[in-house]
Amino acid sequence: MRVIVLGGGVVGVTTAYQLQKDGHEVVVLERQPQVAAETSWGNAGMIAPGHSFVWSSPKAPMILLKSLVLKDQALRFKLSADPRLYSWSWLFLMECTAEKARRNTLLKHRLAAYSQSVLHEVIADEQIDYDRNDRGILYFHRSQQALDKGVEHMKLLESDGQEIRVLDRDGVGALDPSLASAKDKIAGGIYCPTDETGDPAKFTRALAAKVAERGGEIRTDTTITGIETSGDGVTEVLTDKGSVKGDAYVLALGSYSPLIAKAIGISLPIYPIKGYSLTIPVGNRPHPPTIASVDEHNLVAISRFGDRIRVTATAEFAGYDTSHKPADFDFMKGVTQELYPEGADYDRAEMWAGLRPMTPNNLPEFGRRRLGNLYLNTGHGHIGWTMSHGSARITADLIAGRRPAISMDGLLN
Image (cartoon, rainbow, N blue to C red; front, side):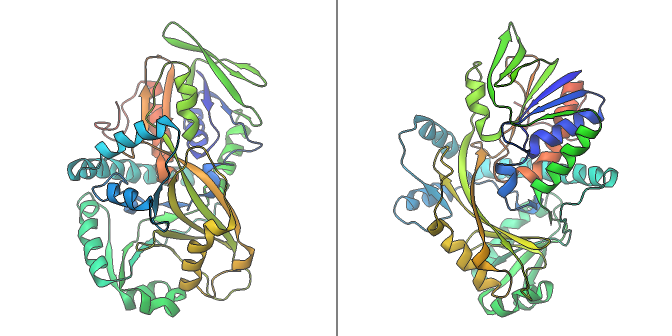
């Protein structure tokens, strides 16, 4: 078939790759001058099944309430005139029970672990340089009490096959000597040796190039303006460069998916949650991070991409606003400098803010709604890079009428 993929982020491009692998003709539509220029550009770059816990937990409502008064919360809720914020927030709060958090976390882990296995298949088949680091990820805590709670918490993922190792302060220092100067501030950590990192934008652009080399079309600088339907199917996608027709269509527009979907009568429970990141050159600094880590107390994630480090933090309920100012990055930069004082040229940090397409239960939207030839692959939230590869394979299987390799119970509405 001829399949039109709406969206050129990591989810859209990996989907195009898997569809092309199945023998389909693919066209990717992307409004930016190149693929992976928005959410897929500035994230933490972690392939992290070990971080599959959903945000919609019993703790979340109090954190959001505190954020109305305290400005240093990892989750920040801003009052807004946007009615979609409140309708989405209500659905989010309905997912914040212990039972639902457990169920959704296990579903998310199932998808994340499968997705990592698909990524490994892709990189075995393709030569792609994306600054991969497969040494694992360290999730560390500042106090023994927090570490003990973290270990107890992690047992849920361990019961689902996630490999974990509990490290004391000395173990953390031995794992990453670049943390030696900050060791007295760390009680210990949980090390997931099978987690990994890599630059998602670099990967996505290299994969898009391979799709194009094999006859696929990557149409950048192409803004989608609407979708035409007839009966129970899509007939064409309207863009500022003319209409595009196919046999099947995949909606992979991340945070912008609900805006396009609403115009054709499909309601998607996706809301944009703003995140912030710094990309900092290592320069000649002698002690950059050697593996990725997450400071669980401050919820700051730090990854190493070759000669750069990527620092991410904060989840702000701010609608489609991607504006930022230097002060927004002071806290995350300060945490990173404290941990890795000789880790990077902090004065040369590049600031970025982008949108995470969050669903209330933190699980992506798959399959069809009302229209027989329009497939959803969207709403991947804060670990879209982790879940993209498996989601792409699942979407290709659904389009082919095949049963996906993992159970879709709880993942397919």
